[in-house]
Image 1: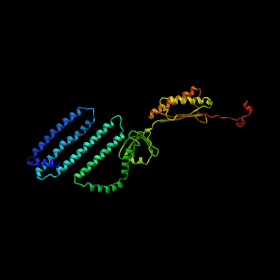
Image 2: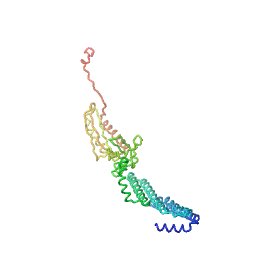
Image 3: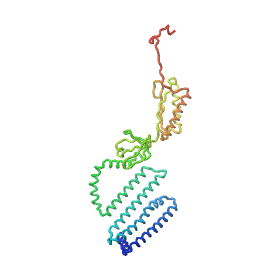
Amino acid sequence: MNDWLLELQRTLFSNHQDWFGSVLFMTIGSGVAWLIWRLVVSRLLASKTRLHWDDILVESLQTPISTLIWLWPATFSLAIAVQSQTGKQLAWLGMTQRLLLIALFVWIVMRLISRIEDYVLAQANHDETTVQAIAKVSRLFFLAIAMLTMMQAFGLSLSGLLTFGGVGGLIVGLAAKDLLSNFFGGLMIYFDRPFKVGDWIRSPDRQIEGTVERIGWRMTSIRTFEKRPLYVPNSVFSNIVVENPSRMLNRRINETIGVRYDDNQKLPLIIEQVRKMLEQHPDIDATQTLIVNFNTFGPSSLNFFIYTFTKTVNWVEYHSVKQDVLLKVMEIIQQNGADIAFPTQTIKLDPFQAGISSTEKA
């Protein structure tokens, strides 16, 4: 690569007195190459195939290659003009071109990662948290490689840099302890996956409850049910208990229902009919625990309880199923000539203690 650059420099600079003509020639050549590239790209994008990956690759290359077509000859043009006026050799030309290639490579990779991320997120079946995590780690990896390559291009010793980085990393780690704890907290969320984007989470330890909107490197964005944004540092999640209701298998119905004491003879039949209704209900999961039993003697009612689980975990659908169950329970009670009890009090008065004589009673 270096030999090719030196030979090209010799050819271009052999007659640097006519530098304007050389610059004009390279500019025209860049324009022609750019037009050809645009024509090729438009034809490739127009010929749609079943695979989307080739379109993603072409779209990622389109702008960076166009930039390279103009900038690469521009470096030679600038070098010819400067050398023609000053007569000095330009030692920085090769360095500039290497840095340009590294920057364009990183640019292409970043565009490719972003387009792949957008494409995967647009699909029906995807895990948004995993996709975003892989994309972020990939960007960080290629940026680190690019920085190390640029430092090596400038002549810096990577072994010395890594040695200095060990000592400097300790100092930076102590100074940015909270920042690093949030960063590694974010990594643990990605790897352990206690929740993902779109999940409803809550913490019994903190006043945290809502839907996860974004998991960043430093903090997680949560939208509360009051539609307020909540920003939680990632390090917090390593010290608190997090409940994820979105991963429930079922939702529970746990209700106590009271009938009148006058209906005590009908209570066993009511309980049996309610149990059969729940076992045959299309939205009740009969494979889970299902209990309908007389429970307690209440102050003004005979109480039996219903303990069962719905098939749906959706909050709105759950309440619809629960309403249907309770209405059917009420219907069963009334069909048996009974009724649901309500709080009552019986007051007994002793006429003598109340100061009412027998004459006054008559």
